[in-house]
Length: 454
Image 1 (cartoon, rainbow, N blue to C red):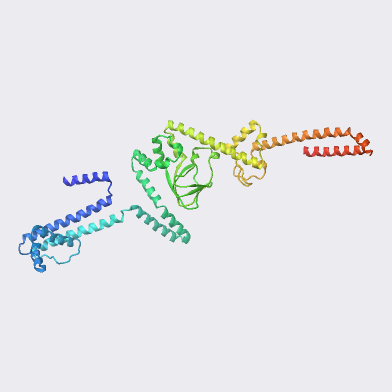
Image 2 (tube, rainbow, N blue to C red):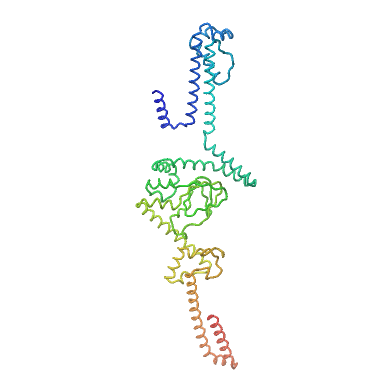
């Protein structure tokens, strides 16, 4: 009954303080060895007290001599017997204390046999526990050995071997995090969510529109977070995914992202044209927590009140991204002289905005950037969709009308010069000069008319 109480007491202490089971096992083995030595010392000392004037104690007194009080009294005899028990159990056996009677020989034989079994069991168990006290370190070493075998079997180049080994050395913490996720999977759903939220609440708080979400939703989102690692100078491409820098440094569109940095907040948008496509590249070994839009939408499907808040967030992000998208496209095409917004009708302008927001019109960069469908523009019809083509026709019509107006003014000027030819003849005294000037003016006007018509 007392042993059962001790077991329950140990379980209670472990629940309160969380002692390592490996250390508890080592403590149990130490107690087993101590208890075995105590029993052997009691047996060996009892034989000495029973055989008064004979036996191993009298032999030790005669051989070693020493103070008389050293061999008298129960405590002194127990001390010498405990020394013999420890030497016997650990297989050292100095031989300074030996049995002298038949009873002592039987007792020594029995103690030596039992102590050998106990010592062999303890040594094996302790070695096994010590070798697995840090399972993560054991798994890492096993992984590195497997990696070395793989590289040797496939004759991997030396530089690549160095890169692979360096990657695994820098991602030891990632392996530990993945092991933690496996441990969490063994818990009940409620405990899984609470622990996952505690571990990741600091990271989720970096996203501005998660602040207004209920605690229950954050619990579900915490369980959906995944962790990944990247080597330096590696492009980080994750489609429609929110990413949070856990450790390391990355660069995105000239901006440095360090611990707590975020990109992909627009992963809520289903319109691909409005999502940011800037490339993210790791500058150092990078650890990233990621949340896919599918996991967020699946979570929101169970919480209607939060789904409404998310719709407003999505509308705000879409409006901001749409305005920026249209502004970039209009500014770029205006700079290149391929579009004049003032020449578009209201209907054409709305159609232009619609195609810009759906990816039909994209920002032109240089002359080889993909405009639509991933093709490079080679002429005006390929460079712009139908709205921009209609805009070009409207601009040409406006220019034609301006040219016709100019032609009418030239013809009016020619008629005015017809009335002046007689006056010119009289003034200069050269017959026919006014007619020649008039004919030259008419020919230039007709030539200009044909050019503008073309």
